[in-house]
Image 1 (cartoon, rainbow, N blue to C red):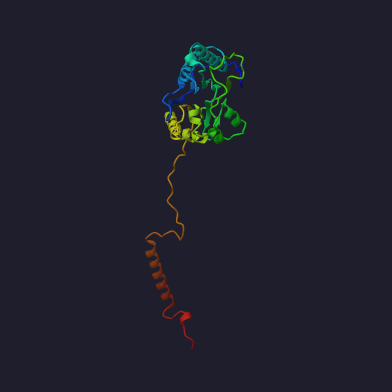
Image 2: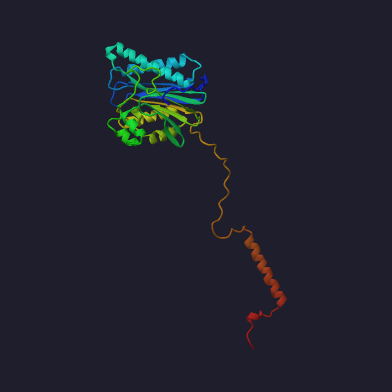
Length: 321
């Protein structure tokens, strides 16, 4: 959905138990990092921001977006639904960036893209502009929630390009929406994407900038996150390392929030002692005293036979007359 729906659910002050971690890295080729992030599990707030490359002041725009969004969501608590709060926060951030851009020639044209998630009342509410991403990770699958507002992203969403073709496309970084490059009114439905879905404690939320997803495919994101389930800081570190190994052409930012039961191992079956191995061939061995008993019985039978028959040999041994 593109405009805030009137979901009249008051935000909770008690987010679910979340294990979360976030980190950013300039990459291997850039000395300046224009990415920013927020990882505040105590508030159920997670965000990644990417200052738009090619413009002076991308880092300034990212800083301003982080400041304005956090202030609106954390300091200005209201009874409005979370999607309305997110929408207002992103509009305010975009306007603040645009005003500063117009008032300072040094920052003319600065902008940023972002994805922000609020986890409250058992739901995740998402505000999104640009080509940063949110994935939902389950033990058996990874799902991209946000759509890229970019030339290549539109073609990928239509099925015209597969993931690898999109990752390698020369126009993959041409974005169509951002915060700050233009003035937007609250009624602009083709500006901010909003999503809302139940948050399952057996899932994880992965937010990242294109410095990761331009170089690391989704199946590797999924596998790496599961390998370190229960330790989000290890997952974040491993994902950033993978992007750097693949080239590290851009700033890389990752935030991972795991539900309390994400990839939790099932209760192991109670172990029982194994029976001794059964013989695979031949009869079972006799106890050691049975051969002696058998010999004694044979002797007794022969003695009895001799006494009862006298000295006459058995019929089978007699010669004909």
